[in-house]
Image (tube, rainbow, N blue to C red):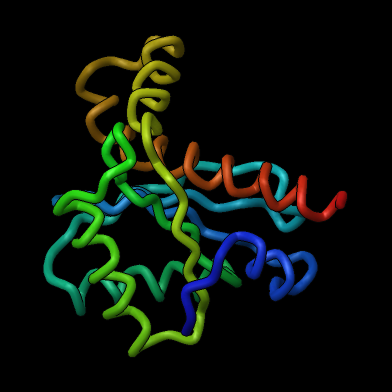
Length: 157
């Protein structure tokens, strides 16, 4: 498996293949999935974090079931653009995944994705209790949609 830039991913993706979005939290992994034409990101149920190997197995089972060709994982960069401990943790997670899957990963700046997801869920009048269970997948959907929009722009050029 390799870590690719979004431009490299655009060159290597097979046509009509889904991409998964990941919002890696400390307690859960938010998931989203693109349609086969890679136009829309749809939230999927969150995975509860246990330990790395269990998390990786669950993620790869999801990828196999949904025929995922690549992952876009949110990189939690600080608002000033600097990298903190969560960026290091996310990069370490992807490095560990390299040993067990050939599927490529692309990092995507996730600044404000959780804020946008929270706002969207509030606008849909989702209760506080239900928002807590859906926020990570909604954030993964925002992360993935940003990457899909960029891939779409690259394919037009």
